[in-house]
Image (cartoon, rainbow, N blue to C red; front, side, top):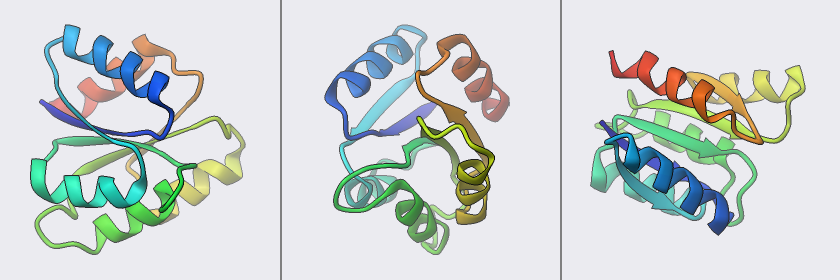
Amino acid sequence: MRILIAEDHPDNREMLTRRLERRGYEVHCAENGAIAVEMAKSCAPDLILMDISMPVMSGIEATRVIRQTPDVNSVKIVALTAHAMESARRECMEAGCDDFATKPVDFAGLVALIEKYAA
């Protein structure tokens, strides 16, 4: 399974990449939403872990753009955010995210979520 991590914090990118690669996933990274949109087109991920608060283009806006882009509009997108309020979840889902996970990341829970979409 090919996963695109869209995350602006380098330590978070590194930790997620290392842990997911150990589990056998192919991982690509983008440090902002604009790069995530371009990488969604070029690396054809099966799943995007989309940080919501990023510079240049937010994860919300990147999700909206991806949902309007032929050939990648059906990729599964899981929002990752420190904002755990219901309003944040609703905003992510309205933008086109398929699921929602909060930070700090519960890695076992995140892997279960990834596996849900791998099937």
